[in-house]
Image (cartoon, rainbow, N blue to C red):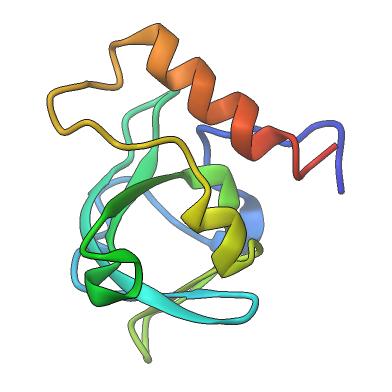
Length: 118
């Protein structure tokens, strides 16, 4: 993909602006739906979505950095990411007690997802 990929900021193609709510939107991977957005943040340098995968991967929630969002369809209330279900399923475990202030956790997420954008 691109050497300039930025994990923690939305791409221009996502057409997101600060404060634009995504909670409740469905998330679509390249090979199908993966769940609904349970939480979203557009904090500078740590923008991300938290997806509740429901029964798909046993109710696990996953954090997707904003840079994984390819586009958002507000009419359909869908967020499209350019990752496969398997890539998302294998992502680092989300510990709800961890915050994005935890640089080790943030770096682990960024490294994992960044490997798909090199």
